[in-house]
Length: 502
Image (cartoon, rainbow, N blue to C red; front, side, top):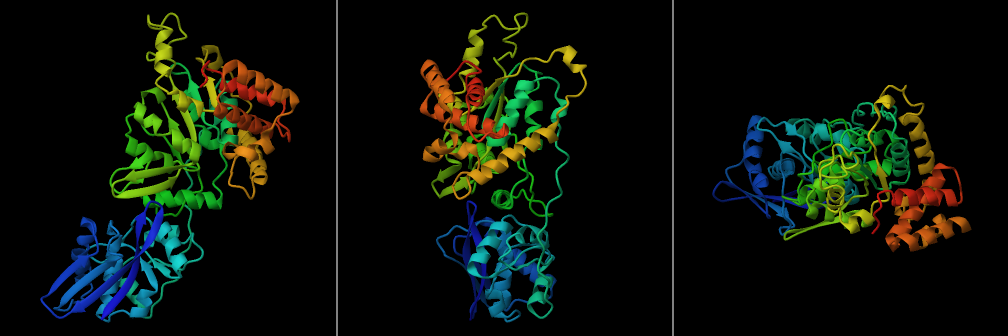
């Protein structure tokens, strides 16, 4: 007799159904697993043996063969332990075969039979829902998987409890849960001065426009960037599901369930291409995908290797990254807000005659040229962050903090959500082609100004459209239905702030 259980194998954020077939046949006693298992899957037989022995379940003195179908699909991960155990228990008639076959299972077994949390419960639940089966997963993964309302999620804490569930002592379905909220975000009120940079942060948050902050050490660039999470609205249910799918297969979801806070990723400038764009063993998602629907903060931008920076160009435009390897070709979403910070030169004091090096101003031009023209062309807002005067540090707290700015951002985002309903765009940064012309064409004065700027400074076609998108966001923050000349002027000012246009 061949008993069947089901589980999943992960390809990017997608979960492909895998049939776990178990045959117990006469012959020399043995336990074989076939179907392209990796080392972790091959070792499952020892964990299953020990877990069953802990439950006083003896295996028959026969040949046990486990086949993972489709056989040409690579199988990776310890989550195959539970479905292998279930198919084996069905084959020796401990569990009802039909009930096991109606279940998608994943979970790692400890030697004592406890179920250890595994990655990927959320995409596995979506795969189970598509197949019309229930999901069986470790108790620690239940709150995450239960966010898929179309599937019944059973989350036992041990193999023994799973067996009792199938044999007349059913568990109640798991309930969706939210992870503990993050600590209170840092407040913009803590930043003294830097009003232009604060305004740029507000525009960036409202329309998801990429921002570059350039200033000497200690001017507050990192401090400003760390406060942008407090300006962004919470993830919508659909955004939370998308983002959590990526975090689930990366093992970043906590036992409490999914998180509604927008991700804020800040990799070090020594990060590799695989760490930023994705890749490595199993072609896992990189930082740009982990920042999906959130913020990617790259401090000391010119210090990142040139090859790493160039990998950002296509994902910024398309909102997805393709990780192509010899044995994998995977797509990950990556609609992120890029906030970058840089010193004006290597020593950092280009604007201070008393401290700048003898090679000024050439050292500054040379340093910022590490950011290529095509990448700079994709950055909408460029802001110089001057040093803060000592007298400003003694001033009282600014009247506006993150709460007030976040209120305006939320209003602008709500206007964009209504505007782009039924389209593929989410925010102004996504608008393109005919849609961009319909929503962001400025009035006559604004159009004339933008035409003069494009001719005088040689705006690229991409730069021209990005100015329109920023102007549309500024108009939204102003509560204006029409993009007017002041909105275009402010957008152009941010575009040309560093005196460099591609």
